[in-house]
Amino acid sequence: MKFRRLLPVAVISVAVSGFLIYHTQVNTDARRKLVEDKRSLDARQWGSAHTEGNTRQQENKVTAGSACSPERKFVFIKTHKTGSCTAVNILQRYVLHHNLAVLSPIGGWVLAWPFPPAEEDYVHTPDEKYDVLINHMVYNKTWLRTKFPPDTAYISIIREPSSHLKSAMFYYYLPQLLKITSKNPVQTFLQDPWKYKDLSEAYFDFCHVTWDGTRNHQAFDLGYPTKAAEDLEHARRYISDLEADFTLVLLLEHLDESLVLLRRLMCWDLREVLYDASPKNSRNYGWVIDSQMLGYKSYVPTAAELANLRQWKAVDYLLYDTFNASLWRKIAAQGPDFHEELRYFKDLKDRVSRFCRGRQEGRADMIVTASRWNPRFVVDADYCHGLKASAAELFSTIRKRLPEKMDHDRTLRRISVNMHAIVRGQPTFKYNSQARRHKN
Image (cartoon, rainbow, N blue to C red; front, side, top):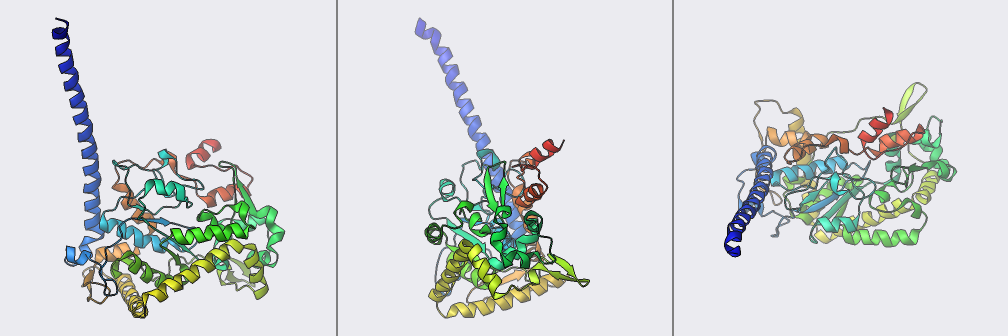
């Protein structure tokens, strides 16, 4: 009797449980389908429209005559003030063309700084699987290995340290921080960098981290701590590990060589690594002398000043020298046809840039004939739009396809904004929303 009374209850419980499981699965499937539908739409807009015959045969990339499979999983550590926006445009277009899942910040453009992102700071995919990371974050091998599979390619970009200092000087309010009032703060600083050691180390109180925009800024972006600036033995070991971890570190001064090598190592098409050769950053970081505007970027340091900087930025120079040597070793291993491809790439890049810069509505598309390094493809309005688009515009397109809306309360504050606060004696914050609440 007792069993008979319990039987209907058990049946109902099973039915309800089954419904809940089904309902959860339907929601998950629907969420996943929404993401896939948005990716497909973006691919048609940003990629497939300019690809002739989007067939499996064309997916087998042409790489110096050898068969290979294109790499679809990569992490790009977007370093600061290194020309990374040019590189990220290429990677963003690749993401949109191939419908790749991006580990994206929940708010704004910056994923994390200086620590790995908190769980609530990025958009979670339905299956917690990601193909790509392209937003600002400090390299953290341990955290990244928990989010990406072992075969993921790691890429970054750096530049010659003296040019990096000139670019960073104005952007991070360094003359104000260092209390340099001369007409040429770069020259003044380079004459005796150690004089400013107590001033150059900026303390970010929201995260209890010391950061130095004048010293080993690029190494910091790649995970090297400020406090170890003078421990060169530690730096050598760390940079040796980076060399083993990274598929390629691009060099801004040799960007074309870097991109051709990237194409080969990743087994991509040449059309996928073209970029707009038009100047992007015309800002003049400068001071006035005799009523004529000169720029930080135009100043050429003396040999003695460069020697000072090489000692001051010893870790950044070690980083640059290591990956400069690595780049040319990898290029030498490609064989003599690498330089043939490089010449072809430079010519094609310039021709496509000129075409897109002067393109008018109704004008015929540009046809790029097949070569040893690319199939025949069309440069049309969509291709030109992607080529000329800013990193912010392309990221907005990537971000809109994700199901979670942008959470502006979780937009991370940029380093430069916090630096401006530091020079004014104000506190630093992780989120812009925290700064607004503090102000009010």
